[in-house]
Structure formats: C-alpha cells, structure tokens
Length: 220
Picture 1: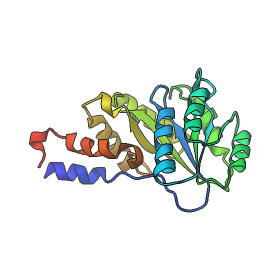
Picture 2: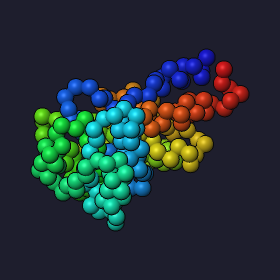
Picture 3: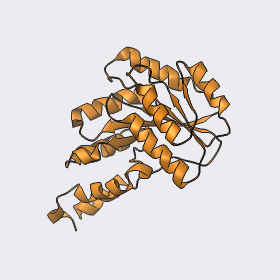
Picture 4: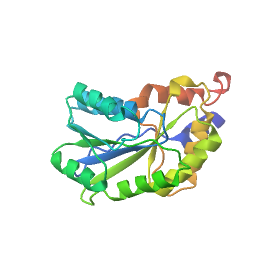
C-alpha cells in the first residue's frame, strides 16, 4: 500500500562510519540556531560512553557569543580534548595533535545560506582538510523549517560539500511531511550521499516519525 511504499522510499537511518582509517573527521554545518553544538554533544557522548571510542572536539564557531564555552563544557563533561580553530591550517595542526583518536567532531559557525562570504569561507575550510584524513559532513537543519527554505538550504550547502542530513527539534513539531519531502527530493535528484537521520541521536524519534508520516487511520 501507499504507506509501505513511502516507508521503503525513506529507507533506514545510517550512522557515522567508524571503520577505516583513523581519525575520522566529522563536520557539522548548518544555519544558525538549529542546535549543531548540542547535537554534536549528544552524538559524541553516544560514541564515547556506549561504544568506548576516543573522541575529540574542534570548533570553528568564533562568531556566536559563548559558542566556544558551550562546547568546552561538553568536552569537559566527556573528558575529551577541544581546540579552537580559525583556519584550515590550524584545523590540520589540531587534528595532528589527536591523530590517535577515533572520531573528531568539528563544530562550525552557523550562517544564513544567503550569505555568500560565509558560504565561501566554509567551503574553503572543508576543502582545506588534509587529504590524509577521511571526513563526513552533516548538514543540521530544524524540522520546523519551511519546506521552501529547506530546499534552498539543501541546494546551497550542496555547493559547499557533499553531506548527509540531521534533523533537530523533532519534538517541536507534529508535521513531518517536510522531512520526508526533502529526503526523497534530494536523494532522487542529487549525486551526493543519501540524506539520513542519524540513528545514534534519533533512533526513537525516527520510529515515531515513520509512523506519523500518514495519519494513524491511514497506516496499516
């Protein structure tokens, strides 16, 4: 039926790849106010506390007031090293200092997708990562964002880097159609990795999301 076909198109949530060469560098990018820093802390704690992995933090978010202090609090709680970076050169040097770690989470400054200068700065930062390191990029967006804006954000960030999607603020809405639409649209019409809802953070909400795509009376 229609419901089952929709679920099959949605697919299964993926997680951060923990195999291969170490360290793996995980970038979190996205608009302001979507909860990137908090998302990083939640996902990082999962990998450290439940999977016993060695994690470290980098932050390039030097625009927002107290942004570095917020991540430092999380780093202290998780007993993980943290460095502030201002350039790709500083980023590579900081990574080299923790090269024996499993995962390095990189927090970035939020900015409007309409800001050309900041988009270009982010593109340079990501492109500046030493080729010796493997990376993943996650675009973090709020589930409450209007669909038209989601399309514009997804397209603009595609110009910056290939990415996967993480949706935040799922507890602030009961309307999940925009999430389904953006996943299907960008998966079918792009060459980058299929968007995902990270299972490490959203496992329970993901199940609730799938059940809520259609009204309960329409579900099997």
